Image 1 (cartoon, one colour):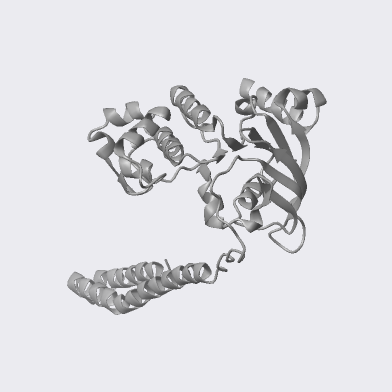
Image 2 (image 1 turned 120 degrees about the vertical axis):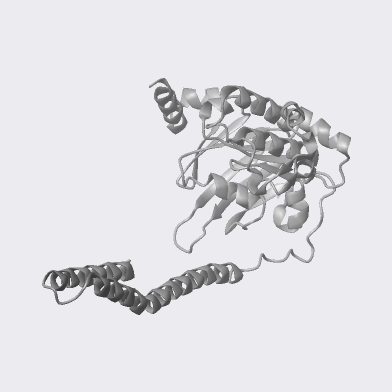
Length: 333
């Protein structure tokens, strides 16, 4: 911007002074044009230097981000006695679990609850309450500062991370799809799955109908991040991928707030089939979608304020009741 301003200023000065001199008969219009050309040639090297400086600053900023990634600590290795899981029932217990990303203050403070095999556990609370952190502890992306987390009575610190995560499937708010065919994206849930198994998973997820309507069907090539299909269709493919993986536990992050009603119904039907018989943890944004949860955990500021079924929490008239009725009022406006 500075160089552009100087260029414009020099143009104005030459044109102004040259115009006055031309009127007085000292020079001709051609001389003014020549001087304008000289002025532009004089500032061209300065413009080139400024452009190179901008490129250098951009490269430095990019290098900083690269080195930030390279400087990240490598995930801790599994303990020597850590075992691989062969089968999982899905009984999860948090016993007085506390965790903090920083040294000062707890992100989670004294969380205790039990999830029985096949139960649907909903996590509710305002932004920053610790819902996502709780899931990250369960999947061992972090280890708790204190307390224990057990799976089928075994401390998860004694389970290999790869084996633990293989028993879990994630359907998140922003479903990620790879560049490749629809069939390949679904098969990512289980790489040795046959074409028939891929299509059966798509049918259970309510994705088969829109896939076959597309040109090339299951062989349709998707662009990076799945661009070219709608957000709802991405969610259905993510559900199909999770069904194909056949996990013992599920982590679901609702993502139907910006999706039309018909697609939302299809997604909910697919999720119900996916959750059947599996321990599920649902991060809930719209409380009316988790009314059927076996247990709702109400988190606030890293603490577990309340837990119980939807009806039980409404009868208590506590924080969950305030959140629920607040959402109803906003929906009615």
